[in-house]
Image (cartoon, rainbow, N blue to C red; front, side, top):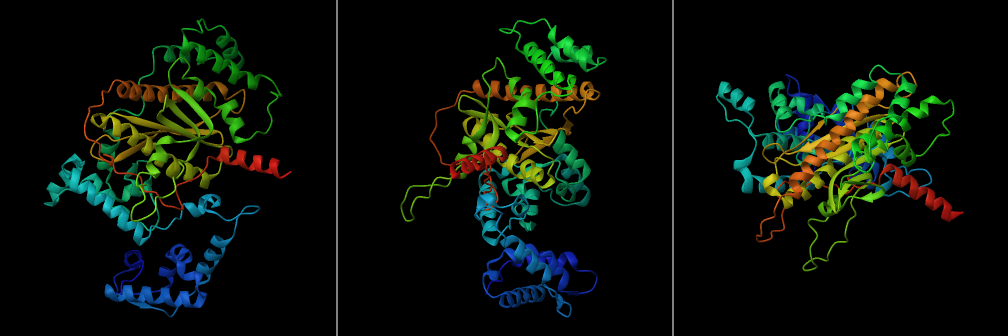
Length: 491
């Protein structure tokens, strides 16, 4: 009989195995506590479930010739984790949408998930193996070791098969800020991945360096007065108009003891503090659509396997993730934004490293499905805002079929009259850089003439991996709005 969770258990045993061929069961239990607690075995009697998992660990040890000692065996950590995972959120009904960000970050990568992941990779090998991205640094190292070089796609897949939990690699996303990749690629390989394709930081337009030079030595009040005097025509000079309004509005907040703005919700913070990220598209065809907006591309991605009722009944349509802002031109999406009002490390990890990358990749897939010849030229962007700090994410596919994410450093919003001049400059640069990336992609995409060919129900890039418990969530501000609306109805 097949042992459930065999690969995960064997890998965990190997991780703790030293020079000797024996090991205590306790560290294995501790490492597997999340998987054990979330498995269906605990829907049965607790003691029966312990016996089931003890047997699995012993059987896996026997398979690889390792003696597992059961002299020290404590299940308290597993029981605590099970009790914690079983608690419903206060004042809410337990449901998938109400799961804490912490529990979603620990979504188990099950045997069924592994099979789906492997099928996706097998299809990539069958259809596009000759297009895989083999790094020059990898080739050099393989030549020195007299071995066959592995492609980036193969290395990402192998890492994904070792994972115990859902990770962006299961969507073939390689985020260069994720330190897990330091165990898979060496420094030269990571540098090659980072430097491929278009640069993350684009050359600014001609007006920005001069304006930033002019305000460099000014204090906050001087910047306010300077911004009011910027010579421009609002109907034509859209960049100067944006700069004048942005500097005037943001600096004025710090020139009065009481600006009239108190503690606000996340959507209010977005429109009062970070509105400059949206208003920079003044005069263009890009519109920043916010508040409870569902990503069309993400919704299509989640429903890409939906089919007519035949042997099985048609599935209900799944909604895409709700984002705080989606950047669109007509019905074409180019990027998105997610905001958290307060600094929350767990929520930031979820938004920045799981939710945003998945939506960004679905947007990239929607673009490349139309313009497949531009596969290695198109980009999508994502803003992650946590408290007073902002970071820009840039996603592309520079070579092969791997989607890469590069990030800017985090930039803080001004907090006082004293730090305003130094802090507002990098935020302006960030907004201009984002606009440049989007407009470059939009220009290429809009001018692409789609060839007439036979339709196939498939994507060129590998699709995102959707775990039923881990990928769908309303934006933080929209979920707060929904809660407020419910309270109002209940009164």
